[in-house]
Length: 372
Image (cartoon, rainbow, N blue to C red; front, top):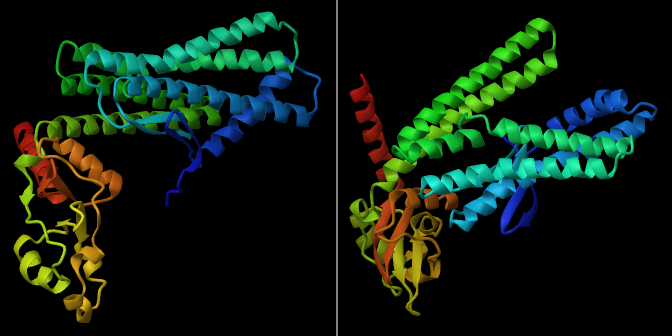
């Protein structure tokens, strides 16, 4: 069972969400700061004060993580790459950048934006600590934020995909080779680094430090899975970007608005066997008829119900010259298995999810046979 993220707010058109796993790490960070960090370096305060300062510090840490991810997002958007949302979760945050960068240069700039932001924040907190040299809890918060932002920037520069450093490495290799090869190599480094973290976890268990062991182990597993998943997504993008919708679409004749549901089920549906059908409305606009909605209408009403009364305005479609990658992303975003194909104001047909999936299955089977 997976809980839905909590929507917080929108900034620069990007939805910021809070995953439920965030509460786990928020508690652990607050606990560590309140029970160990602040009492050790700034003694003499009450339990309540330490926990209050620990909670504030944890919130400010995640504000820094949000700025880190927002930096990636703004640079991506500057180059025309859409960003759907930013999720804050147990391992920090992730910006949902929906497309691959169009060039190695853009990939480099988008990846480098996050560490630059973190190092900039660390420098600003360093200056603030110099301006406010008082040895109190406020100074402690400033010093903590300086350290964690520097650590955040440094950790993300590790050349292990999908960390920022791994993406920078991918951009450098991509400039000399192709994107898929660059992703494969940087993904290997990501997997290797993940196993190094898991090794640290085993060593921590031997030393009796179970909390560190848990974090090393979880982070290692997360990076290993993320590295593999990112490579598969890139491979999917490369494959589907090489094909156009026009090569795989099914021709479907538009339905006239005065046709009844009975006429449609008799003359249209048996011929094309699609789930959606374009309808030309009396106002000249294009509508979509979903067969699943027709089945909700009693058959006794089919002869007197016009298709235009059941159809809905066409809001999502692709052109014949769009890539299959764009088509499958739209299908996933709007939870559709078929999309209308429109050129100008003319409906040419539909593109089906199972056709795209069959293409991918053939590709992966061929790849497997060549590797065996």
